[in-house]
Amino acid sequence: MQHKVKLYILVTALLFGLSPLAIDMYLPALPSMASSLSVSINDMEMSVAVFLLAFALAQPVFGLLADRFNKLNLLLSGLVIFTLSSLAMPMVETAEGLYLARMFQAIGGASSVVCFAMIQQKFDIQKGSQIITYVMATVVIAPLVAPMIGGQILKHGGWEEIFYVLAGVGVFAFVLSLFTHSEKLEAVNKSAGSEEAEQAAGSSFADFIAIFKQPLPIAFIFLGGFGFAALFSFVAGSAFVYIDFFKVSAENYSYLLGLNALAMISGSLLSAKVFARVTPNKKAIIAGLFLGPLSFLFFVLAQMQAPLTAIVISVFMFNILLGMISANAISAAMSFYPTQGGAISGVFGLCQFALGAVFSAGISLSHAHTPAVLLSFMGLACASAAMCSTYLYTRSCSEDSELSTDTNAIEPCRSLQL
Figure 1 (cartoon, one colour):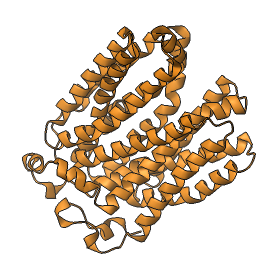
Figure 2 (cartoon, helix red, strand yellow; figure 1 turned 60 degrees about the horizontal axis):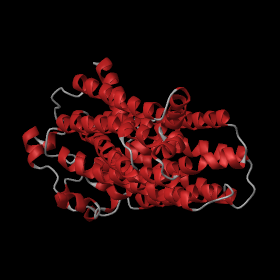
Figure 3 (cartoon, one colour; figure 1 turned 45 degrees about the vertical axis):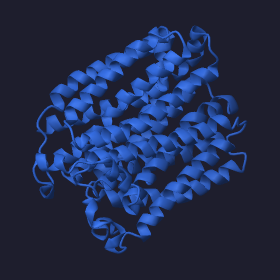
Figure 4 (tube, helix red, strand yellow; figure 1 turned 90 degrees about the horizontal axis):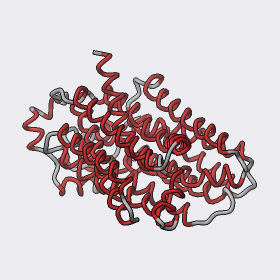
């Protein structure tokens, strides 16, 4: 049984890693792609924004569908779309064709969000939180390692091979999902009733909108979203800061990215192993509170001629905290909606990538010549996340009226009390 759970985690992590890989793995190939398609580098960079926008909007759609229809069929359909669009990418001849293929690739990758609903349905909240911790580690690590993978592929082949590799990974994920995610999922929440009852209570668009009106779960969602925004700020600006400003070699830059990936893994392991008995909401709130002083450090470093060592250490500390926040924030938010895991995970994904796109676009449009902009954006994102944690901490024992009784939410004081 334990072996099956480990395989389930690995395959789910692979499913969630597809989209981050698709976002960042082709970044080293943008100049050669621009030359091949006879377009400007700005036109190529726009394909990143197209992917992020489509991915952010498609996640809540798949989330709503997951609460009403067969989750495995939705997942497999998305993988087919992802694979076919990846294969179509090397065949495009215009920037518009590239945008269209990237849009469908993002839509297909967004189907991975139904895995959150699968986990909620299959496992209890404590075990589900541990599984999500390992899965989310893939999501936050992939943007750091994907450019290195793409660079190695580009070193030995053309930019087309990057998308062929992505298509191959999509096929591999499809086959594995048939073996690991095809078993009938049994609801573990006794109050949810039978599977038929759960589907009957599936989310509607009105339920999706109602999530944004509930302060406690949406605070957890924005806590994770702003943490992800700080990560995307780093991904967007780190190459300039490390390579252009501090003259770090490309090889050493990859090592620094690997160091950050190690920090995220460490934070995830701390959450899943060392603090396994601590509830997800407590871990998310406490780790988020630590982002407060860290944001102050980022702002201080932005106002001075900060040495590279200080920046590397501060980013390392951030990644440890992010490794603890990302999975626990979504687990805590989902605990308010025992039968609507698809909808809440869709909102979480929308918030993550929308904020990530805004902050990374801000970095790109700033035309910075010093590390100050990168540090300021990371400080702003961390400060916003810390504000969400502060709100959750102070309102954890507020009146039950904080959440309406028709949202299937658990009692907030019982859930959040520290």
